Image (cartoon, rainbow, N blue to C red; front, side, top):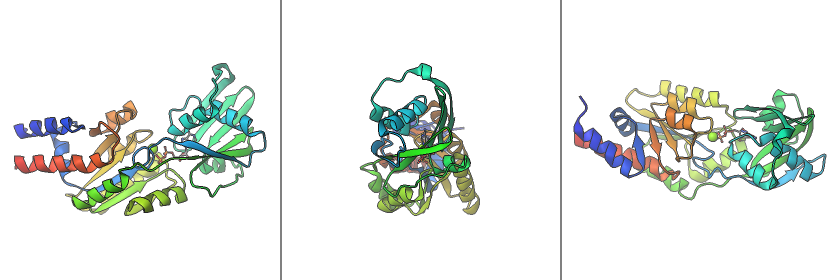
Length: 287
Ligand code: ADP
Ligand code: MG
């Protein structure tokens, strides 16, 4: 049977904006020693702003328009920033077909032009030579009818409380913090260094993130639990795989909220340590 205190614990946690889906997750949270994060939307704001257009072989406005059309149906934060930079209404009739490739980008048919918009991996997969850009930010490379046409550089910002959030985790006895990112190595490194994260992996696909969590699960002792924290966008598989999956921000996708064991009502990363603290306190009262 479940001690009543667990219900009180779950109730108390929910008042603090921490929704726990079952008393067993309070126990797992209390035993968490490894915290693994996603970068975009978890440690960074996930609000990208266009900072430049580079190596364009057609007028920049046209390149941006192609990107905006190709990305029009994507819910990725990158797409939102491109729509904002474009600033014009999309004529949906011009979008003949579109496919989103998780962790890479989109391929769309706009009128009679095949538009690819995404990262270096997407270009490599389709054997399109591309220009890398050393600026800080994420590049969205554009290819038109399989010819490289230039790229947009868009930058995100680290959340104000992210550094304190990592320090808090150390204070409450977390052994290791790990960041898993689909972004380019130099962008991920910049964030990891600024925040003081112990272990960093970049250029990962959603399935690689699952693999990294599995490696960690296999290498540690059974009592030390692994939490994964993500904002939702294509994180559902890794949220389910960790001992405790934590979805952050109520705006996260429905799939993520469903896959998660704990949902944080706002997107403040300080809430991660807070959730673990509440769980520990509750467990101490029970036993
Ligand atoms: P993260 O691990 O940082 O949360 P994602 O897994 O969501 O990132 O995406 C990884 C990378 O894939 C992004 O940094 C971006 O380069 C590329 N990408 C994903 N979705 C899109 C999209 N809709 N348009 C362009 N690029 C995208
Ligand atoms: Mg993500």
